[in-house]
Image 1 (cartoon, one colour):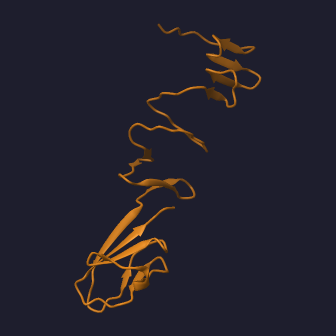
Image 2 (image 1 turned 90 degrees about the vertical axis):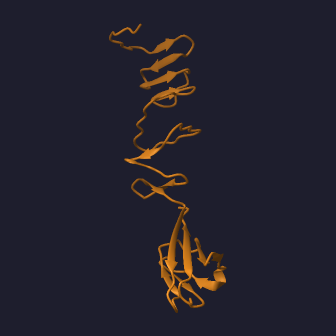
Image 3 (image 1 turned 60 degrees about the vertical axis):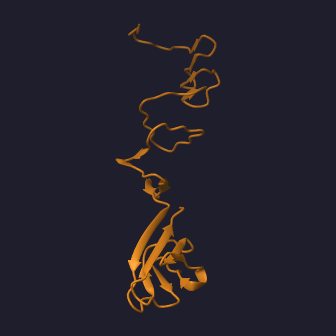
Length: 159
């Protein structure tokens, strides 16, 4: 049975061996402890069906059951959250771009992080000495294609 009455703390409150502890001078409340280090400090687990966290937060031992939503998007399997400098965004750690080579083609354009790209020609992974990938926007094969080869560039992102 719920009691709906005004509740006022004037000189502090302590209920049943630190079950609830309020400190008026520190303007803080402890649940399960009288050692209160934050405005609200809970000694034990917190269960919630909806949580909104704003500002800078430090979370230790966070267990999430279900999905994580950022803004209005939910990441795909294998995605991770990366900082954009002003927030976060979902990032796929691996993107694959497939080309069908033309006769004599050596250059393939794709965005990548230097040092984080694999190159496959007809399913065979090339070693780094067989191509140049140094500018983050194009990959240049040492040997020209005959034409109709499948060239796959796999870019990895670990920000």
